[in-house]
Image 1 (cartoon, helix red, strand yellow):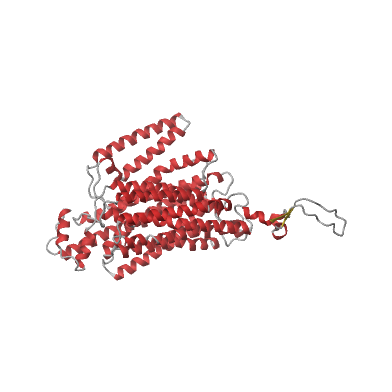
Image 2: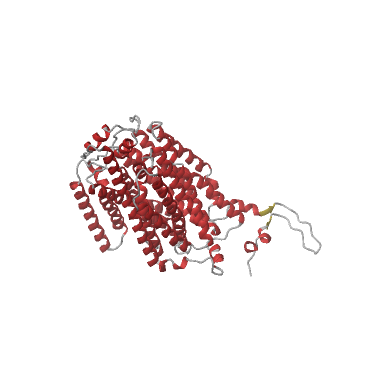
Length: 598
């Protein structure tokens, strides 16, 4: 898995890990932050959340275009600086329930989105360029899986960091977190609640609201919002770490850097990778656009993790967990499991005795750590916050990546590995299964208030991770491989633009939240996934033909074949010929392909 990979992969992956840690620390609490600080309902907060996600994933299209004209590396560094400014603005506490504060927040979100546009897609193009060398070309898919795993290492710790900052602020004021209390406090300040529910809910969580309920409500919201701001400050620090990694490791990827202003640099970039005819270029672009159309709906359902799935965690899921489930909310226990997985793989794959002994020792330590976490964690574990569920998806990605690589590596050796478009289709089916689980778990729920087992969400995140591993890292690798050389940045930007559309569509289920039953809501998402899967499988042959390494079928049309044609002897004495004659039209139209250039 880690063999025959260029050193630049690890530098770029770690730089991305830091940036993603900051981003997902912010994103884990973003919806809750909007609802608490500004008193927004699920509809409005869902629109802002979806609009921000859409902008974040649309801006790489602009960033790719800028990089194609300027420099991938310079765009990456500039993006880090712009994102830092955005997170810094968010980290500064402002007045609660204020229009001015909301405007400032929106300005910060625009900065973060613009910085991400310059950073995200262009860094991944640089990763793809590391594998243009023949000795590394066979490791491209594995590399993007490792790159994706590194992203999720940062993501896995993000909810914990956000929760810790929230608890730090609340504890300093003698308060505790209650999922329903921010909405109750805002309702009281709006005059929509008489205070009885506020007093009762505060007392249930060990707090005394006192006689001045308005002061208590204001203080509670302000303190919670300040805790969220502390989490945004963590994102600033993570960007500094990312920049240092990127800058100090520059020599490992220096050979792929080009400056578009240098003479001949643009030509060098354009000619990296296979040279394509206009027909092949057109076919590949069309194939990519069709794939983009499908992934729109995947991201619509997948990024419900910060939207309807967070709402479900907040209002429909028990804040308690028992048995082995409870240690899943300890990120260090999850990390121990992931380490154990890698040690087990090394045990079976290593040929050296010392390496195997070390692996056995690590597995033993992991077993002890899990027993320790199990014994010291309260049973039941109480006070689970909604954002904590978001650490399961990145944990699953980290832990399951070795299995994914091993499985597809085994298929590749048997020459039966499915193509990237086919994996995307399977991913859509798996996403449908994931929301089928949510549908079953919601059948007994009336309205949007319940206390179902946390295992429904945990299982759903596991199945969504299977879908993600089939689609996301393979999709990025697919784009970097198939995109015409002159359009790499733009096509990678197109991938993120499709993701942007899907993320904006995240708002649709949020608009339906509370208006239809939760089971019906999940049923709609299941249907969307199945229809998308049916569509991509219906055009699978065209996609696989257009994106294969061999000439696309349409290119055969550029070779004119005349069967049993008799050519009349022209003036000059050339004898007549009979039989099939293939005359390459490209020989005149495209000299580089038709005959050797001198």
